[in-house]
Image 1 (tube, rainbow, N blue to C red):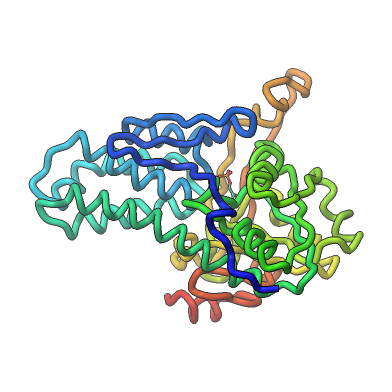
Image 2 (image 1 turned 90 degrees about the vertical axis):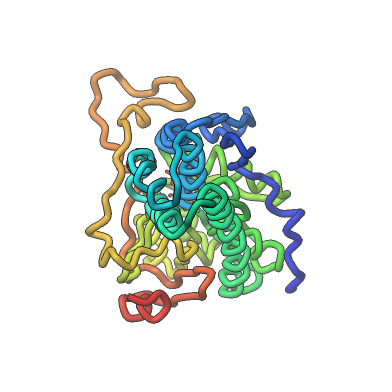
Length: 352
Ligand code: MRU
């Protein structure tokens, strides 16, 4: 069973490319039919790309924001890092405001701010190295989580995933999709199902395309088919990513995750959350305190640019929800696995 994962075979997509002068972002609004990078020359270009979902996925927006700080630094002069941090504060605030729910954005900006504050006249090189480190650490974390998560599964398992948590959403390999890549490579996972993830269709447009690049068969289902799928006995695990994991183990993730967790518990299907420690927010005690992003209701009025809903209809479009920790069987991070998470166990793994 356990053959080592060939990282060159799996995982060839890179959503974020730093050229030294600009940030190139794979435009995820156009996938899968147009594979095109958008050039960001300023930090405000990066903030706009985060807001309009050119780049998306919690770890990826943190990495993009870190490079956004480097871009902003090209437009200021400062004798040391502390002065630079002061001058860069407005640009960092605009980056931070681009999306509210995924903590990785604020985490990456706080890390860049801290690094700046500690650096001297060579602050430019120091923050470029830090942005690179945020990116490479994320890739390493994903690769480690892949094996940790896959190890929880029996040979021959079927899995259902939600949204896109792959290379497209991270520095590479993915979180939940990394576990699926590892599980397939190790022969533990035999069947992969992906929900469409209305309204933005991250599952239908991104996840099944990404898996197809790796030669991994995945079956697309309508989000509304999930409970029925579980009832058929074809899946033993639901495996999802996270945008914020609270101190008590509550998890914010793409809208629809919560109902999957409820359905999984009802059908005796296990529920796994996979995320790097940069997604853990021990400063937020429970999911009730998380700001849930609401996007333009217009995202619900059509598919692929064609209107499907009558004019004059009201819609509500929250794009994340919170899964209570009691519905989660395992949280997998690069630091280890927290089974049946609660405040005590989260504290033991991540400190106060
Ligand atoms: O709105 P998105 O596409 O940025 O939402 C992404 C998700 O909810 C992912 O599941 C989460 O960020 C984990 S990605 C590794």
